[in-house]
Amino acid sequence: MNVRVRFAPSPTGRLHIGGARTALFNWAFARRNAGVFILRVEDTDMERNSEESLRSILSSMRWLGLDWDEGPEKGGLHGPYFQSQRMERYAAAAGELLEKGHLYRCFCSMERLDAVRAAQQAARLPPRYDGHCRTLAHAESDRRAAAGEPCVLRHRVPEGTDVHIPDAVRGDVHFRSEQVEDWVAVRSGGMPTYNFCCVVDDAAMHISHVIRGEEHLVNTPKQVLLFRALGLAEPVYAHVPLILGKDGKKLSKRTGDTALEDYRDKGYPPEALFNFLCLLGFSLDDKTEIFGPAAMAAHFDLKRITRSGAIFDLDKLHWLCGEYIRHTPLSELTERVLPWLQRAGLVNDRTDRAWLERVVAGERERIRRYGELPERVAYLFQDELTPDEAAGAVLADIEARNQLAAVADALANEAAFPPPDFEAWTKDYARERNIPLGRLLKPMRAALTGTLGGPPVAEILGLLGRERALARLKMSPRSRA
Ligand code: GLU
Image (cartoon, rainbow, N blue to C red; front, side):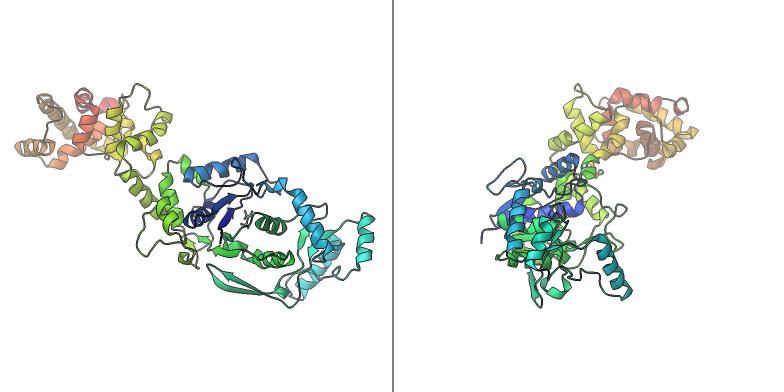
């Protein structure tokens, strides 16, 4: 079978976690099966569409490395890939289905439909169209349409049919056609609906597998029955599980349902996001947690998608970020954090590159986002430090200040700065003066960085250089406050 899959976003908002995961699974399935990955833009909601959303979706996909083979900016033999440009095709398909009786005109007014719904609700019946216009004679239907009476086109859902969906993730799913109402395929005014466009396009684009979120399972019987009306075999469906927050509820902004662009802008490594999305409902085997596009392209399998909800675990994402940052070669990592340092006004063209790499190396183990770096290393770039509360408290102690002045003098007398084996040097120094090591290192750290964090003191001394480091150790903390 020629594998052709599609990601079909509606450009009515930015690309969020769920959409990105759907795109990724489709991409991986295409790559795994030497197939074609299509991007189809479902832009039929003229009021909610926006150029900005489209740009955001495309750029988020590129950021993740999900390249498509057919679609916007790529073209392809089955275009156009914007539904707004396919209107004649929908009209032609609707005309044909109307002719054959698979669609019928419904002239029911809003008032009538509302009354039917209200009666159903009162009788505790599921709301559905009652088939009022289903049996309208052809001639009457044509006459009323010709007279300009507004109408919609509904699908004449066959009675007494079993809709069997052998879902590649969920197994056999069955619907009775009685559960499917005669749904609207074309609105009054001629605008086709999502389910209608989706089937016409999946057919025209020879889609072999529809991989999408579980929330679309309710649409699938309608779509399958429409494929049958068109005399075509439907694609294989694979509905991937919902993404839930750690509280087990549907993902929301609070639990982390954020647009991909927000992660990018906060400096999450794209590889970490890619890896994280893979783990939302899929596992490579039962143990490997860290893997990327190559492993997905080689091993992705719909059988390994879970049926139960996928949990969005932000701690796990942060852990992955740390792993990827630690394993990025230093020069590349420096390149990636550069825009953040520039935006913070810390770095310019004259900044020494080798020194900058050491700065990055000093924090590499600690940061989980590129965006965390500027704040952590700002002390290396500033002339005046403002100690934070904890560091300020340490430096307020007169004994600590005297200690700093003395250690500055001792360091100034050393030929090398900092002394080569700094650990041994500080131990000797503390022992000779009979002070605990912590009483020496903590104030040093506070005076050098203005915080109680950062890399090892020897590294900080090296990064600051002799002159600046000694000045900080000697400077009276009181004048800083
Ligand atoms: N435009 C639909 C959506 O964004 C596509 C659903 C589908 O994949 O069929 O949810």
